[in-house]
Length: 303
Ligand code: FDA
Image (cartoon, rainbow, N blue to C red):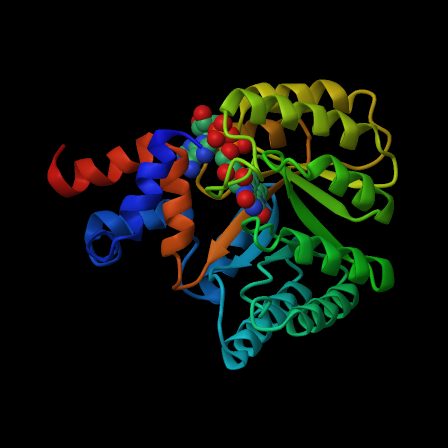
């Protein structure tokens, strides 16, 4: 993690900074770049237009760790509603979920049960559920739940982070299970025992795992990055690939690249977040890119 990333993560955790971003026009304008709207209806409207332009979608209800069962059930119900809309409206979409939002830190059984329910409903709707990967406190449980439910019900995918030192072992365990494996660099501040800290090392690891995934016939790799060098690497590996793979990018990030890959005929899935709890998601996007912080600062202070 760079000094910039740590500084943004530290600053945005402070309450006055949060108020500045969530309660002012410049903050809301920045959020609008990355978030489809506050409601499922708004996300479906944006999603429909993206589908018409040839993109696949992954709907993501924004929200992080919950600490009571009522909130976990509420999140499950909202994700069920997403699957219902995908089914009824015929959206070309799947969903992405966070296990802490489904109760993982209250009781692993609550999150496991929720994933089972979602996988069954996704099967009926002819789609899938991808489990986002959160910070390293939850990696082991997330991989375990994914592995068990993918083996018993299927219709799942999982995000794997290139910066995590355990990733080679996780890939060896998960590839044979045949679901979608979304390879991303990793978005959380992690201790050096758990994760690689230098960008060049993370990029190198990403390329190595990309080669592994693109050579694996039974799995469905999702190349989740906006990094032009890694996209180029995936493009050239795709010539030898047997089986499906797709690119995945975040709503509002490198739309030019998204368009050009779709224009070349590659499947591109847009990760489409929605919901009122957008602040932690936005802070991760700000920490990735100084330009997002300057966008906000210029609008706020005329910097
Ligand atoms: P990198 O950060 O090197 O950026 C490459 C280029 O992309 C930049 O030069 C810039 O042009 C553009 N870019 C990147 N981020 C930007 C931003 N915020 N704003 C504007 N431009 C930007 N992480 C995680 O820990 N768990 C998860 O489950 C997921 N899920 C996920 C799904 C999908 C579909 C994507 C694309 C990403 C994730 N991530 C994630 C986030 C991921 O780990 C990573 O933090 C971001 O994708 C940024 O890394 P890049 O690979 O884009 O490279």
